[in-house]
Each structure stands twice: as C-alpha cells, then as structure tokens.
Length: 118
Image 1 (spheres, rainbow, N blue to C red):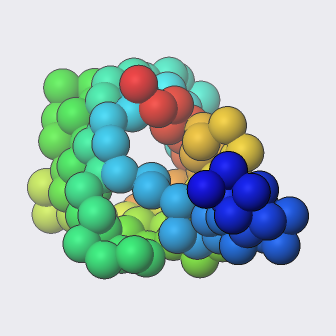
Image 2: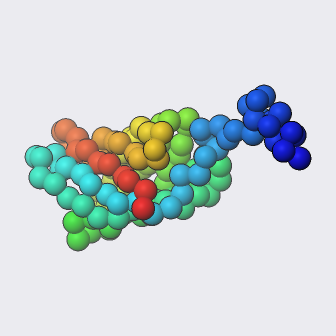
C-alpha cells in the first residue's frame, strides 16, 4: 500500500489541484473602507459545488450575504448589504488567506479585505 501511495505521489496523482481544495469554513475579517477606516468581523463560506459557494459576513455591526466562485487562485463574490450591491475579488494565497478588493455599485473607489481561516 505504501509503495502504491508513493507511486501516486511521484506521478502527482495524490495531490489535490488548487481549484478543488476546500475554501469552505469560517474566517476572521480585517478590512478598510473607501475612506481608509478599518473594520473587522467574521465571514463564513459554505460550499455549494467544487467551485461555487455562498458567503455570509458579519462586520462592523452589519451583515451581508452573497454568492461566490473560485477559479484557481482567484475567488470572487457578489453580495447584497442592505439595498446596496457589491463585488469583491480575492487572491487565494498558499496559506489559505484571501486578500481582496471590494466595491459597491455606483460608488467610486474600493476597500480592501483580508479573510484569514480560523
């Protein structure tokens, strides 16, 4: 059995491609608003397929919900917060941290956000 697993590892068949690695779970949120003020909170990502998910944020006393999708090291989410619609695009780092930029429809500028796995 060990020889079989070692053979698979040598062929690269035992490794999991980046897109298939699970991104689901709970994250600590650290971000900045458009004007530079900071906020924090928590986000929960729930997988709905190998590449799609739902996301729920609780930050700065507010909540928002969205849909998300992963493609290799890119992760994006469209969300609704109150009556506003937004978009966030993250880069998935090797340690599982997500570094992103976000915006709200009809507004100039962007904020930043880092999701760190708990």
